[in-house]
Every structure is written in C-alpha cells, then in structure tokens.
Image (cartoon, rainbow, N blue to C red; front, side, top):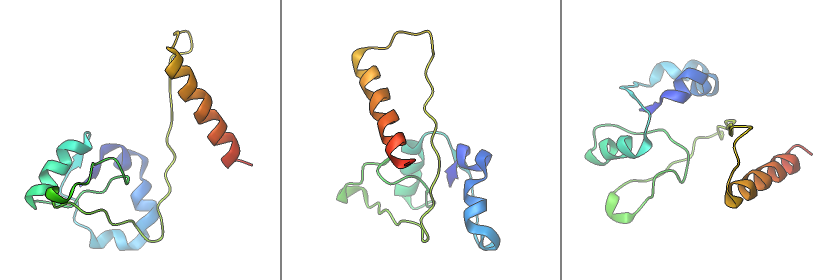
Length: 104
C-alpha cells in the first residue's frame, strides 16, 4: 500500500521507472496508522516515510529504506490572516530557516 498523496503526485512511479511493473499495489491509505494496522496482520506492506509509524519491537514492523533514496517535497500551508500561537510561529520560523539553509 502507498499513500493517496503519493499516487496523486506520481512520486513513486517516477522513482521506480520500469520496475513499477513488478509491484502489486493493493490499495492506498490516507492515515498511515490505519495502514500500519493492516501491515501488522501480514496482509500487506506499507510504503511511508521513516518515523511516521512508531516502530516498537512488539509491533513486528520493520522499516526498510528505498535505494536509491526517494526524496519527496513536502508543503507547509497555513492561513495568512490567522494569528498563530507562539509555538506555531516558532515552528514556521524554524522551517523557513531549515529550508533556507538547504537551498544554499
């Protein structure tokens, strides 16, 4: 399974190229937690970002990174005329700094 967003953005298809024909996608998810519940039953494997699912030994889940690494852009959106709490402003400031540092 992969996320509905990945399907819409065609991210994985661009990464996999012709190898995509060897995958059998059985569905898509919007909430990775729900997809993880299916993975725990052995019904499927789930493609997701590392760290989105809390990996505990008793869950019998394991994360395997793609090779070569798949890099995907994320978008942060907030309402322009909405006053954010201090923690929101700090978060946005930090994200802008990280983005600025990565683009240099």
